[in-house]
Length: 297
Length: 262
Image (cartoon, rainbow over all chains, first blue to last red; front, side, top):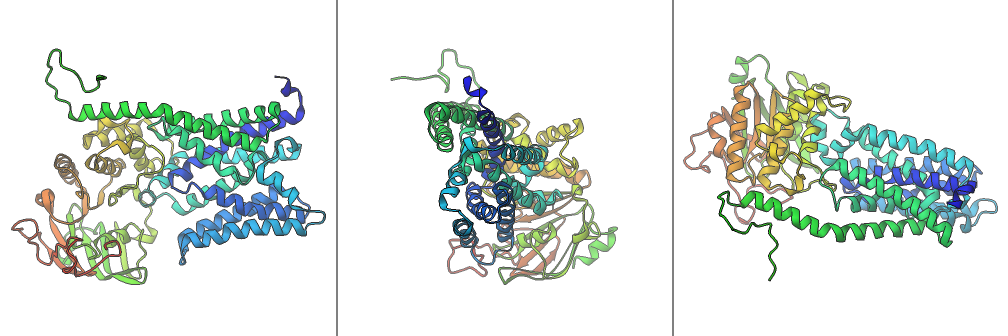
């Protein structure tokens, strides 16, 4: 536990833990709406913000937040009013955002794509005091929205048409989801990097639902997986001197694979039990085999 | 026409006057009138693509109208806010959410029109349990909705509509793809609601087991009202006047095509 003595590690672990909570907390709604890759798109758009931050010599984190929020709102608007094919419009936004970032950072005095790489792939050891403050504030907002409005967001993400008839402000909630996702992307930017953010939003949720039947349990387990892998990945990268972002993402995928392998027999048993409940005869025959008995040949 | 009926009530719970609507630039409703009086059960019938689902979706605001007036409980739809009085059962889609959800979680979302800030009290939880009992799904409360059959899924969606204790039920093809046992449960549930004084607007492909409950049938064809009156005594379920029963595979007999059919 000697790594806890270093201040940069304390900052890194705090930032990593916050990402571990926020990314799956937002990601679960995106997965529920079948927009799992939205986080990836926002990450691309946020690159323009990072570039703009360098060019204007302001904080890249706050600039990226501003641009990512604008980008996420634009994506939501395209989804409503999109006369052209939605996916084409989104592609323009994604790649325009990425190209804009590369261009702006090269225009910045003394800037080069080398500066960009710490944002693309994360750079935990260079997380500054100011970064930590920004990350804490943004993470607090994300948690407030995703936990405080969980019933409303669940309803809108599950069935938008029905949610409208319950009188929920569907559009406002959709916009809020988009903004929250954008904020999460910038929270995670310093830890796992813009290109790997989406993995932490989607994979813990996918892993959790191998085991769960309810939304609440999926949420809780996804967040638990998120914290475990971000902390675990950060510590591993300290001892092994490997890039933290990549370590975290590979760990998450490892968790997904392990849970999937564990869950397959579990799901089979469950399916068998429910089939038995639906179809089994109720007559009690002494000595008869039940459908749930293991039969080996 | 429908006017005779609505004059006897106070104000109709649903009133569409000369409503037009289009989808993707193609006119789907060409000026339809439709009223549901208090306590009345109205079936909206018609072939695929006749505009019956679109008509219902203009009522809930999912499809914008291009002309005419839509009123709910006497209030123009745009100003209507009292959604707890309306229970809606959408046409069942196979697309469940991308994340597992239990029967209870799905039904609870229907209670949000009463639990405004998402804070559930004891009464809300009781309402959820009661709604599940009504559709005979109380024993599946903790199961994932993705583990249910089509009929059970439909019963859950109806419980979700009932949980806000609505005065008006709007159901889009509640019997489509539903097994016989579930159909009977649904018919009994609906009968109970009607006895309690609920008004109902049903989109149906055929009258089927709900026939005894229905006060009036409105038949649409090609975005126009073709018949509005007592449900005709069917000689077999398909003998309805103006009811062109078109199956998607009848390539040569289709009067109207929706974009969904190939």
